[in-house]
Length: 310
Image (cartoon, rainbow, N blue to C red; front, side, top):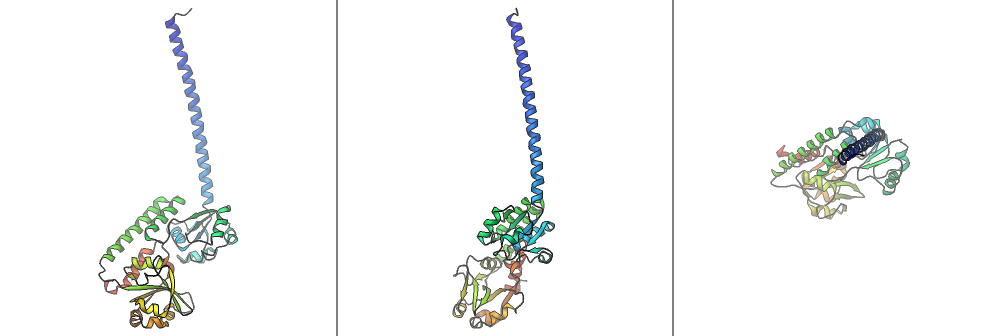
């Protein structure tokens, strides 16, 4: 019979052997699990890459960001507001206006992913697309200058170009900071209104909460229509009472200049802007698109408001 010391030594040795086998088994399991996870990650990466290969871009801001990040080759279709760069509308299929999309129109492109502005619609079509086999991604935020960098970073992360996106986002932030410094030098703000268009002899004006209100503020002007909310039609009398020093409007694609329609309004002729003949026309997507070029658009508008500061 073994004495107790030998038994104890044998028992310890056997215990170490068992523990060794258990550790080896555990290590094998961990190794197998890690290999399985790596394989799944590779497959997921391949699947994700395939998903990102055919893009429908809806919204001028989305398209501009995709192009700025060098992702234009992935785009198979855009919406009608994607007017910059010009190659977008000239070389890509068109799915129509971003607020009036159709499920069939988008799915017929054979796209695997849709990157959309927050304004995309109508809601029932958006719901149908989200329920389809196309991947639907919405840009964060929308009508605010501090959200533009967020949109760029979102697209960069989505398409795995985060470094390039960070460079662009940081540059946009710096340009807005430089614009803010210029605003600080303005001692007397001009009173401006933005006229979206003229319909049946009435001007549609951008009040508080509108994209136009934000851009006028960025350019260092006081919105003379701040008492209104959103876009509202004005009577001639109301236009006179707002007494704008300058009127901002969008350039029109055919059908005459917007400034001619505004100049024909009786209320305009009796306003300070009318008496001075101050109407500024700018490209609507450039001015109100809230894409990477927004700091430049606001700076350009500021230069028109305050020509002595050029």
